[in-house]
Amino acid sequence: MTSIPVGSRASLRTRRGFTAIAGVLAAVLVLSACSVEEPVQKPPAHKDLTLTIGALVPESGSLKKFGPAVSAAIALASQDVNDANARLTVNVETRDSGDSTGTTAEEAAADLLAARATVIIGGLSNGISKRVIDKITAAGVVEISPANDSPDFSNYDDSKLYWRTSPSCALEGSALGAEMAERVSDGSIAILSEDVLCGPLLPRAVSETFQRGGGEILSQETIDDKATDLDAIIERAIAAKPDAVAILGSKQAEKIAKAFIAAGYSGDQLFFSGLSLGKRSSGFAAGSLTGSIVTQPGLNISTISDFTDRLLEINPSLKDFSYAAESYDAVILASLAVLASQKISGEAISSKLQEVSGGTGEGEVVTNFADAAKIILAGGIVDYDGVSGPITLSDNGDPQDAIIGVYQYGSDNVYTRIN
Image (tube, rainbow, N blue to C red; front, side):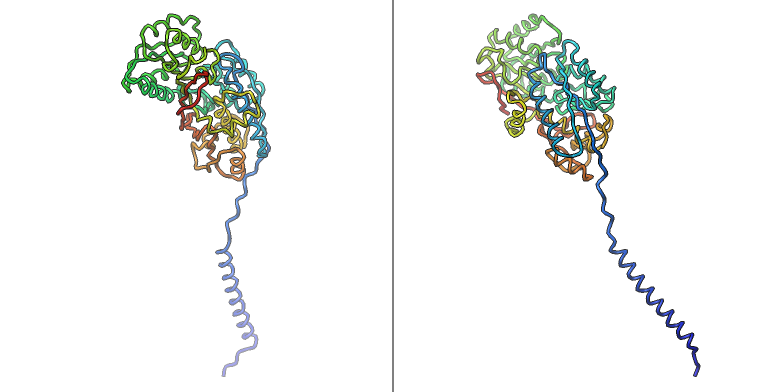
């Protein structure tokens, strides 16, 4: 029998022991590796931010009737942002934009830039924005208009700093033309349009749509915004004896309408587009506007009573809520873009405006700032559908979704939405 030294037996047991232990450890490691979870992603770090918003609001001039609602909406939006505790504070500086006469708008824009505004809400009219857009964007500041409808802005050289929450007027012209074709079936119309209101595209859209419906254009006049003597133009249009007239503009709308009324035209023969006369037209004789039709971008105000009730808490004297929803949404979008970019700069804000409106990405749909802020601060993406509608900004700054409202004046010279 062959003898095995004791030491050799011990070594064999030891090796077998080590082998067994190593096998167990390897198995444990394999099992551990299989059960390791991915590290939890922490929300990105955020800091306290302060955004100064400038507001170009018409407090004087032909557009001042729209100023109170716009101011109240901007104030309400900034209040909602500040109350959300999202580490963002919004301060608002307001200046009078006036109208297309004088230099009020340019001076106001300069004041807001001097106040270090990073975003400017306004102007309301195309003419005002065209006079200040270069100054604003050259300073690296974002401009968001709640009312501009000129197609000129769609391809403007603005370094992607100009945006709007109101659709192009070409869409509004088509809506008015269709309404006229239905109401003045196979009839004739005259078109009088202010040259600063949407340029040639608005009257062209009205004309083409009306003619497609079987109507005839008897007279088409363009009015210089600075013209003081309109008698000859109005007389030519009346002399053509149209069945109805489309009045496209704001500054001269009242004068033109009164001339047609004096010539025997009734309210249901008058059609308005643009900033026109406003909801309550006290400058007209009682009942003279009965049946008149107005088109205006935006949703049905009566469906957003919760919103208008909140505006009335800020300004109980409000009667006209035109462009309030669009102004509110402009502030909210700018604020969400700040949270998403975590920077206070025009370029950074502009880079996120399309995303937070749902124009890019696949963000979660939200309808208020507080909920949207929570998602962004947790590292998510949002698609803000505002008071004015889905918005969904395109890369040229235009909203891709548009709602055009049709309104009709009653015997009290106050219009209500009918479509």
